[in-house]
Image (cartoon, one colour):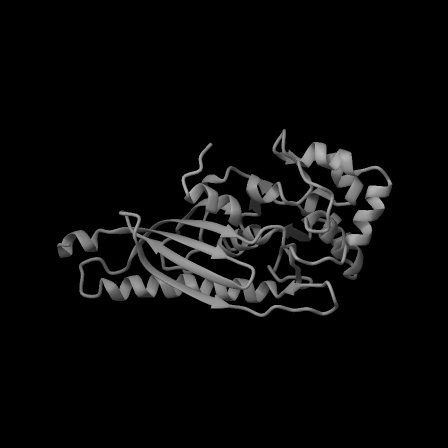
Length: 270
């Protein structure tokens, strides 16, 4: 490829935040992998059936692999006219259902993230099933009532972390699945958002209206003030904070839960 063409190449940076590792892959304009990086992070098992992640470690590893990708792109075009690789947009895909609760002012988590595999709220789900709520939940969310999803995890955090419920109701705390955490961190706290593919896995979204459901929020005792805004999976929802990934802000232009993203990536559009 001629040098001038290489220098003008633009890239898409895909962030793949998974259950055991954070990965970043840069794709060039031909759809070819131009650079990639991956880092594992710790799994915490405080009790049988409990699985937790350190949300700060998720963020640190994800930011590190994104920067490593950009460094590899810069090294590959060393000596070219273009001083730094141009990232046209960032796309995010993530482990779904994992539940994070953090301070809006600082971005610090108030507790470890409760992972999708965690079973600590099984008894709560059984209580709701005995109360006859399973049909209501499935009709609105398309999901079977289960501890796998985020609703009872978030309810547990609000009840068990000292002061969390009052702070959430006052608008001081933010909830999200991992996509929301990454968006919040990448934008320097300016955007608190999620997409339908992730929101649909919380057991709190009405899939027919694509919005948080007030009846479900009351059922799980979740204050609306803690929830992210639901935005389209495809489309610019914000930009990276200046200096985070280079001097120029980068549009964040795609978000999808891992299995939905993989399906779309295999051209399953219908």
